[in-house]
Amino acid sequence: MSPNVFDGLASGYDLGMWPLERAILHRLRRRAFSIGQGSVLELGVGTGVNLPFYGSEARVTAMDASPQMLRHAARRRTRASVRFVQADVHHLPFADGSFDAVTGSLLFCSVEDPSRALAEVRRALRPGGRLILIEHTRGTGLGAWLTDRLHPLWYRWNGVCRLNRETTRAVIRAGFQEVREERHLLGIVRRIEGVK
Ligand SMILES: C[S@@+](CC[C@H](N)C(=O)[O-])C[C@H]1O[C@@H](n2cnc3c(N)ncnc32)[C@H](O)[C@@H]1O
Image 1 (cartoon, rainbow, N blue to C red):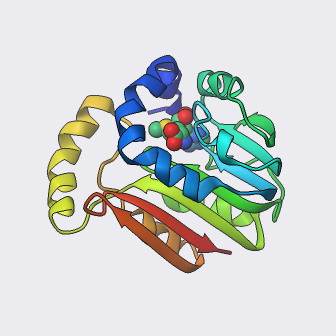
Image 2 (cartoon, rainbow, N blue to C red):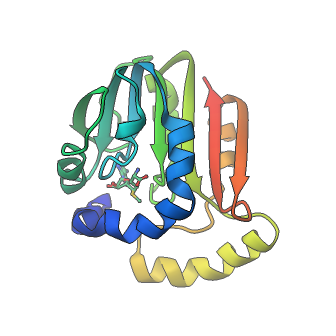
């Protein structure tokens, strides 16, 4: 399915996410994406919820496949200088080594081919550049049991979001170094970082 299913979700997205933002995401986003300076590529920027966290010296390229999501993101207040690009993460329209950091949140659950997308991300990062993700993933222990059980029903209903993606493994397999993660909510929400 085309990621442009997100066009139809854009206007209600922030309201729908509000309980999760309050419970955990806002706190995690603030810690992960308070990047003060440098060139940053944000993947799947959505309605731009992470944009307020970047510092005034950050030059952010905010990309998304959905024009409607980008329209909402463009209204977001931020101190950073931001340009918006409509693109697919499987084919990034940027030269090799363009960015000091690549960020993203809640994206890889809906990406068709995470290996291919992460290869593109790695190509667009400069050597030594950082990847910083907040993703919902397959949980650990009881969390794994839950996400595996709920995934088929959830995916059949929405057709785009997978509940049991092993995103940390995909980041390691893509060749990132120094990969570390912070797990929350039975491992279902993770902050994942790696270095090119
Ligand atoms: C669940 S939303 C997350 C939005 C935002 N990052 C957040 O944390 O709230 C997923 C976003 O990823 C975008 N997306 C999904 N697949 C994509 C792809 N292949 N290339 C670019 N953007 C994609 C969607 O359009 C949507 O805006």
